[in-house]
Length: 256
Picture 1 (cartoon, rainbow, N blue to C red):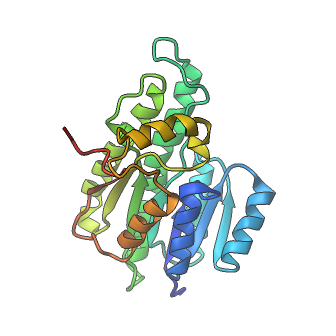
Picture 2: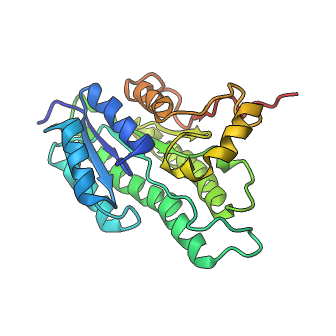
């Protein structure tokens, strides 16, 4: 049996997901990475960063076959120690909720919420099975949510709804998997400097500088999220299943 811990990180070709994969790789994990775009370019980036200690599973996270392929990749090592549900998208169009389109709603919910539920289901069932024969396996699950779980943005309502749903997915699986001692966590990033926020950089620069979106008055970085995953992976919070980690520079504080 493989003695290196194994982690699945969905949506890991860039930004937060790639940073998480880097941190886990530095801890000795074999990282199972995933993307649905830039196939050849991404493959080279993964190879350069992780060498032989990675498995690249290309596929759309909305599709059940991608979930199966990711878990099957872990099965080759006889263990799955960590699932990080990171894959997510912004709405294809930012539209007021009075005119937003059903097709945009569907694709965001399917990617950001439905996929998290069923990817977790697939991984959790294998984690339960693998624990029976893997004496040193201590599986954990991390869902990357968003402060949009509780912050209203009426020009991207589908995104807010999807991230609010991720919070309940976290609670449900934390409850269901507690009997197997598999803790489940949610991380809620604030405004993080990634490709997803690049189109609104100027807007957020002003908001952040004012202190309205971050008490610390700085952008969050992908590494800020990866550091939390690293602590979770080390077992620092195993007795805190269901815990939500706000990684938003203090945005969640109620301040006068």
